[in-house]
Amino acid sequence: MVVRAGPGIEGVLLSKVGGHTARLDKFEVTALPANSAAQFVAYYFGAEKLAKAIVGINGDQRAVDAFHHRVGVKLAETKSAAHDMKLSILEAELDALFEPQWHLKQPSSAITIRNRLSHDFGPTQVCHIRQHSPRLVPIMVKFIGDVDRVLKHLRERWAASQARP
Image (cartoon, rainbow, N blue to C red; front, top):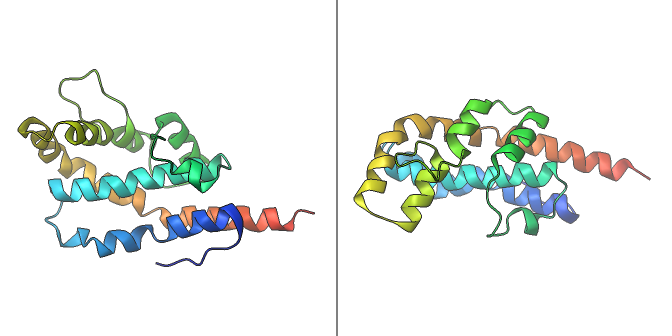
């Protein structure tokens, strides 16, 4: 889905969020084996980007700030934004995706597993992804599936801001 950007901050966010699923399609993520480690990695990047987007939208942040490479996903802010936007993702599902588990030897959250893989591309980290992909990939797909609700919310906010004197 391609969304034409309107003026200002909202337009940039519309462009970034609206092209979200198209980028996953171009990556051919659905051609990868279902619930595989490869799908996990691809869908995680999509889910992380959407989490940053909803927090940015909810906090009236500029797109450049919301998507800055040093901005991490914060679970509480993501839950709050998802609730405010009435997304279908459950809090427990957001926990499964974004709960920091740095202290655990055997993490089960997508964010911790992906971060460990990024810093240590070894057999243990690959095993964690392979073990948890069947549970986590469907949650990421569900979350990313809420992109239309996010776009609707953003358009409504943009329209309301334009109506103000």
